[in-house]
Length: 329
Image (cartoon, rainbow, N blue to C red; front, side):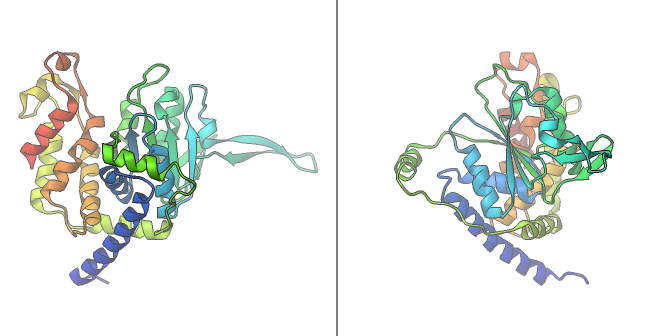
C-alpha cells in the first residue's frame, strides 16, 4: 500500500514529539550541551556511529549512558587500553568437554554483542584491536574462526577520544574514521552551565532520565529518516560540498594544494542521512540548506587530512570545511 503525503506528515509529527521528549530527558542529566545531544541523536537516527572528541570530565560517558536509557537500548562499555586484544571485544572460542568426554568449541560472545557500544578512549588501543570494530561497524556482524555472528539490531558504536593527550595513543586509521558517520566535538561548558553542574550534581539527589523509546521504535524512526524527501537544492549542495573537498579537481585552490586526502562517497551518504535526521529532530519533514551547513564539519573533518605545508600557511581543516560549506549552500 502506497503511503500518502498526509500519512507521512502525521508520522513525522508523532516522531517529532517523541524526539522532543527524548531530548528533554537527556537534558535532565546533560547540561548545556544541546548541540552535542542533537548531533549524537542525529547520528543514531541516521543509523550510524558517532565519535565524541573532548577533554576528560565533559560527561561523554554520562551522555552515552543517558542516551541508552532514553532510547531503551541495552549498552556496554569497553575501556580501550594498549593491552586490549580483539578477542576482548568480539569474543572467542573455548574448548568444552561434555560428560561423555567429547570435546567441542563453543563461542563466547564479547561485549560488542549489545545495541549501544561505548568504546571509551578508542585511540588507546593498538591498530590491531581497533580493526576488530571495522567489520562490526560496517556489516553489523563479526567473524570468529570463519563463522559469522550477527549483532543485535540496531547496533551503534559511540566512541570517545581525548584530543589533548597523545602519549601512548594510536591515531585511528582512515578506514575506521570513515565508518563514523559524525565526529562531534564536546566543548567546555559556559560559566552559567558550569555553575548549574556544580549545584545540581554534588548534592544527595541527582536527576535520572526515563525511557522514551525502545529498539523497535528506534528502528521505525530510522526507516522514517530514510523515507524523508531531499530537495534538489539540498542534494546539489551536498554533492558540491563533498566533491569540492577532494584534492585534484576542487574549485578551491587551497584544497588542491593542502589537502592530502578528501572525503569519499560515504561522506555524501552520511550527510544525506544526517541532514534528514536533523530536520526531523527540529520538527521538519524535509532538510534545508542550513542543515547541510550545520552538519558539514561533523561529517567531513574526520574524513580529510591536510598536508604539512597547510599549518605553515595558517590553514586548519575545520575552517576550510566551514568555508566550503558556506560556498556550497
